[in-house]
Image (tube, rainbow over all chains, first blue to last red; front, side, top):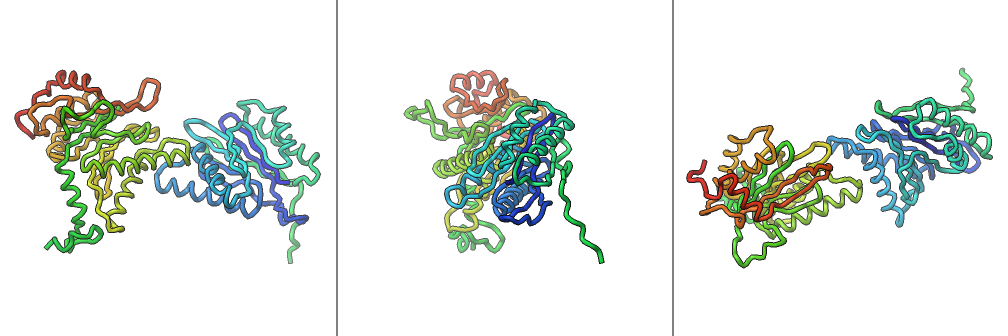
Length: 204
Length: 250
């Protein structure tokens, strides 16, 4: 039921993830941030087994940071993606991580890029990608409306179309989404799309 | 007095020295010299061949120069059998990096990784250090052309020009005088051959006694490592007028 999708635009990459933390029939919280900032210019949006998701993305994040401390230069997005894929591949036949990942980054020399890495260590460099049941809807929407070199406004419009489609067509659709963007100025949160806010706590 | 502290590599002497490491460097001081020079458009490595015999099959292999990866090569001075182990280690480390990151290993990281291995032999295990010094030459997109020198202690440094092996101090001082920051690759070749001719103690300089290799970028932007053929090397020696050794050494 977790929805994660992303696309590459003109000098930027956007990733979107739903924000519900679900356990069986219970929604623990509806503002869980599933898009981690890997370093100054990389984002990793993850979906899958909740414990694995946090464990794996934090592991990747710390290794990316360690590389930068040791060597004085950051990893390129491609190198980080290949490293991530390698870790999933190594663990696969012993103790697999059930985590699907969309890794978005911006490199000065090569611009924005998006990598689709699934839990059995498949990796593809893509312009648009999605995981989960929501992908049936978001991929179709992106296939229809995506073109290369979209502006931020056009991309956000497409993202909103995808979110609308997921909300209306997926039976147990997550109500809230977070959108994050990475471009030459770095990786940062762009916006939330909330249709259900937590009830305010009555004050004494 | 120092004899008490020689037998184990992994202990300090009372003066704070590691004798085995120093003895390893002594061994290298008797080996054939190698010189490396960094230029704007490439790195030049030259080496003095100690094993010269008409019977030696020289067609395919080199004695002093080795390719570590597509973008890194090295010149060695010291015990050749030790060098082979380390060269293989360096090759594996480079491939291991590319296996994980799908990118060529940055040159300094490769040198650092190999030096970490060498350092291990000065601190634990009870094994003697490697009797080899290296000159690493390479290119990568972060820092362009680079030249590194490393020794048995596991120390390394980035250099504009360096010499290892026999007479390396004499070679280093000539390099200090004659090196210019904006030297071109061709000028670097000339300087390297000139310095080698001054520090080698042999009667004449021919392509049988030296090796020359260059790391540079092809017009398409790919890194190339080329060992000079004996014919081309002879022509260069004649062109630069170094076929006869210099009468004085600096």
